[in-house]
Length: 136
Image 1: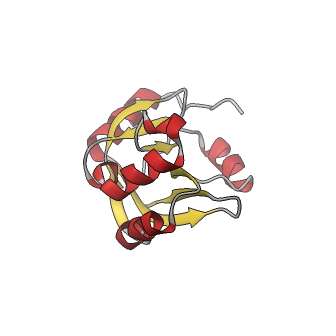
Image 2 (image 1 turned 45 degrees about the horizontal axis):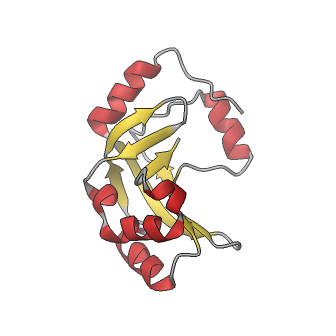
């Protein structure tokens, strides 16, 4: 599905860059071994998609998330969980690519966490070069 962007998408991107993305994180590992930090938007979270598209995504089971990858060793997941599972944080964003629906995290908080970085490195070599990001 092609993203539908609101008319004020540029202003929303600036808002994200200035204020970050307030959210609650939850470590999730799917039965096939794929792990992510699901991102539950809190008040003040700026969405890039239209409300109609967000409703469609949510109906299909999609959620905002920070991809960690596949088959990550349990000790690494335990460290990520201990630090971030259930935490209410602001995800600080360095860059937003509105067409690939990705917000690249900067080097604060989750984006600088050595356990998150290690999980990404071990879990998905194709994405490791890009670094931690929120799929939006």
